[in-house]
Every structure is written in C-alpha cells, then in structure tokens.
Image 1 (cartoon, rainbow, N blue to C red):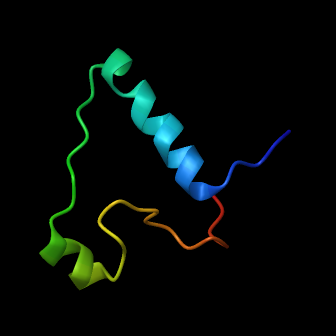
Image 2: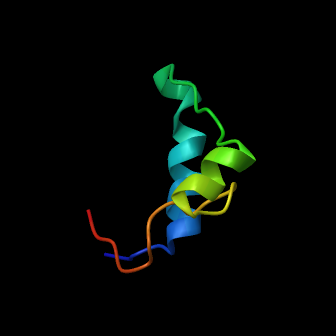
Length: 50
C-alpha cells in the first residue's frame, strides 16, 4: 500500500470524476481566503486521515 501526497491524491480523484458523471467546482479566491486554503488545494492538512 502506498500513501500518495495529498496534492496527487486530489488530482487522481479529480481525473476520475468525468467517468462518474460528476462535475467539480473550483473555489473562488474569496472562498479560499475564508477557509484559509490555497485555491488549487490541497484542502485538507497533511496530517488529515480519512
């Protein structure tokens, strides 16, 4: 089992969305500033585990 870095994990997940018929929205700069994350992600801290 390999644990991917968060930015790669989120990129892989985003690449699967079209096949599932899902559409991913993008944070605006105001939204990102409000929750204190970069617009491009990652959106969870490195220590976060699912």
